[in-house]
Length: 479
Ligand code: IFM
Image (cartoon, rainbow, N blue to C red):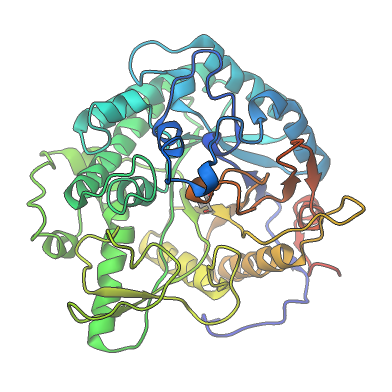
C-alpha cells in the first residue's frame, strides 16, 4: 500500500502479541522536587527561571510532583493495563555536578520507581538524557565541548551500575536534534544560545556521547539488554517536485536526520551535510575515530513522530512562508539550509499548530526500515496536545486525541503489514506536563492534571488507549 492510499479506519486491526504498549514522560517535565535531596539546577532550571524564556514564567520546580506521587502514577498505569513506561533520569538528581560520585538518594528514587513498575508488571524503559544537562557542565561549555560527551559516558556507567539489574530497555539520548539546534542554534530551548557553529559542535558531541554511552552500557549491562537512541526523525516533504524544492528537502533531511543516522548507524557524516555547512565550519572538531565511536551496534532504533516537515526553496533575501514551528525563526536551527522555507501542511492541526498527517508516519517507518534492514523500530513518542476541558462532572472528554492516536496507530499497523519490524508504541504523554517553552499551556497527557491540586484524572482517550493496549486490537474510538 502506498502513502497516499487510505483504508477504512473502522476495521479492527490486530497487533503482534508481543507488541509493547506504553506511555512516555521525561524527568524535568513531571518530577518537580527541583531542589530536594541534593539535586542541583539543570540547564532547564536556569532557562525556565530566566524571565521571558518560558510562557508565563512557568518552571519545572513542582511540575506534576511525580517525585512524590510516583506510586500513584504507577497505580494509574497499572489500572489502565499498560505494559511499559518510558521515563528519563535527571542527570542533576543522580550526579549533581555532572561529574564525580553519584548521590545515593537520587539513584534510590529511580530504584523505587523501577521496583514499583516491575511489581505492577510494567516494563521500565529508561532514557538517560532528555535535555536536562547539569548546569555545571553547561558552565564548562556544554555540548559544544568534547568533555561533555565524555562526562555523559561516565554518567551512563553510573546509572547502569545502579539500575542494570532491573532495567532491560535503555535509550541514550532523546531527540538530540532539539538539544543541539533548539538549545544552541535558535535558542528557544535551554541553554538558549544562538550560535550556529556551537550547535554543530553540540551535534557532534551528542553523537560522540551516544557512542560513549552505549559502550559504557554494554560494559555494565547483562547481554540481553536492549539499547536504543530516540530520534525525532523528520519526514521531510518538498512543497513541489521542482529540483530546488527537492534540494531544500535534501538539506533538511541531512541536518535533521542523517546528521544522527550517519554517525550512529553508518559510522560517518554524510558528505552533502559537510558540503552544505562548509561556509560555517570545517568540522575540525571531529577527531579521528569519533564517528566509529558513535557507530555502536544498537538493538532498536526509537522514533519520535508528531507531524511532517514541508519545505521549499526560498531565494536569498526572499520572504519566508508563514509557519508556527521553529523553521523560519530569527536564528535558524537549520545550519546550511538558509535558503529553505518551512510551510504548514493544510488541514487539521493540533493545539501546537502541528498538522495531523499519519501517512507521514507510515512513510517514515517504511523508508527508515528500507535503509536499515534488520534494525527493529519502536515508536518512542507520538501524541497530541489539544485544548482539553474538564466537564462539570469532573471528566475530560478528548475525542480528538483518541482520533489522532488511532489514526497514527493505524499507520503503524499498515507499516507492520508492509513488513516493517515495529516492536512497540509509547504514547506521549502519560500525564499533562511542562511542555518546555510553552510551560503548562499545552496538554499532551492521556491523564489530565489539575495544576492547582495536582489531581490526576484519566481522559476518555486514556480509557480508549487502555483497551487497545489490553487487547492488542486497534478499534475506532467510540466503537
Ligand atoms: O514534550 C515533548 C517531549 O519532551 C519531546 N518530544 C516532543 C514532545 C512534545 O513537544
